[in-house]
Amino acid sequence: MSTKNGSKFLALTVSAALLTGCAAGPDFKRPEPPAAAGYIVEHPAADSSGHTATAAQKIVLGENLQAQWWRLFQSDALDQVVQRALEGNRSLVAASWSLAQAQEIANARAGKLSPHVDLTGGVGRQKYGAQFLGPLAKPPPFSYFSVGATVSYTLDYTGGVARSVEQQRAFAEYQQYQLDAVGLAVTGNTVMQALRIASLRAQIATIEALLDRDRENLKLVQLAFDAGSVSRLDVVSANSQLASDTTQLPQLRQELSVARHALALIMGDAPVASMPEFDLAQIVLPQNLPVSVPSELARRRPDILASEAQLHATTAAIGVAEANLYPRIDLTASTGQQAISFEHIFDRTSNVWSFASGLVAPVFDGGTLRAEKRAAVDAMRASLANYEQTVLTAFGQVADSLEALNNGAEELQAQARAEQSARESVDLTRQSYNEGNVGVLQVLDAERRYQQARLGYVRAQAQRYIDTVQLFLALGGSGPPPPPL
Image (cartoon, rainbow, N blue to C red; front, top):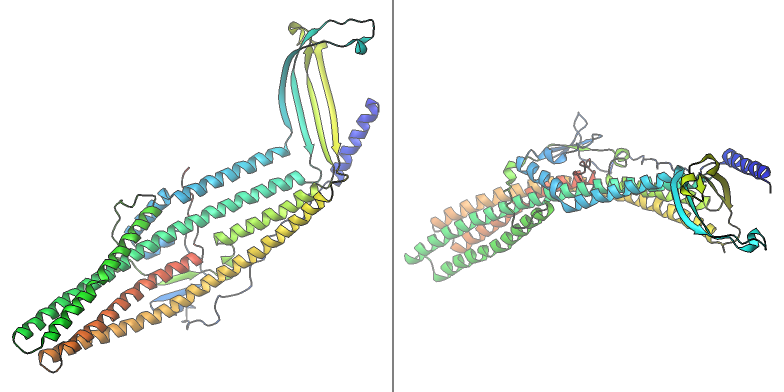
């Protein structure tokens, strides 16, 4: 083919590619948010303002949670440990670097959309054979020098390269939402451990107060025994009650140490690091609980957004697989200087250039490329199912949290009534014991019931805080900014 005919062929090829070119594969469309208006069928009674009452708290459906949701507890100590966790947590730092890596890979992939320019240079020695110059010629060996530039470009008329860039950018979005999810987990675990510490400290204080009363009971029984008004069995029973209640402290103190160590590790510190003390009385239970509607939740929760990014990436992968079914057109051009002596390399007569196009079209591959496209479609459908399951799981978690708040409010009220009744029973039984109307066993039994009621109230109170945090985590919060790299 002559040079003129070759140029025409190349021009026709490029023109046809540009006219018919389009992005291969389906375009990604964000899934429609769910049409549900709420999370649970039965709701507590709502007041005239539209708020849903849950004991001392009100669920406000349709409002979004603020970014720094832990500040709703109005605790300086809590704010400090959360900030330390965001600055020192190693998982958060690792997720930040994973995001940076994904972004750089996307930038590298995007570079394939542009022509590549390379500088070339060389020096060598060469000798032509007689068959090349003629049987009578005896060409001597010679040295040569060259310098120039080469431009190469893959004509993306099918959009396959663009789809691959789109796919990698979707992966980068996935890593961004993974970072948000790790940030939410870090803040949530920090607040959870802080509340657990506060709860365990309250339980330990309750046991210690009950032990003081056990000692007081033992002292009274011992005095009565010395006076001959009670038997030795009463003294043994009082001692047994004191010993039984004392056995609860080591386990609670162990759990407190584990919670403190866990909090230190979340903050990126060794377990020996000093931890602030937390008191439930100094942590305010949020009264207004903003709850996003389902359609908004699907646009806020990091795990849902990460699943959506995966769906985007698998959709773009279909375009990559489909583009591989079409011919690939590569264009290359080079220009430079070549000479057999270095002093003449930049002469005008030493200029050389070339322009070439290459076309590679799949003819027979045993069905590999079409199988890869079908596999990409299957992967997209699996990602869609995973996305839908993630949304349903998120709705279920919010519904569970709302139910837990409702039931927890009733439990706390019941525990408060039980504690009040048990306290009154102890006071009346003690009074009857002092008057000689009942024995020490009745006093110890009343004390035991009060102990159980008091511990039940403390645990129910702490559970109210934990259920509130669980709701905030189920709502997805608003992920904190990544730490500086």
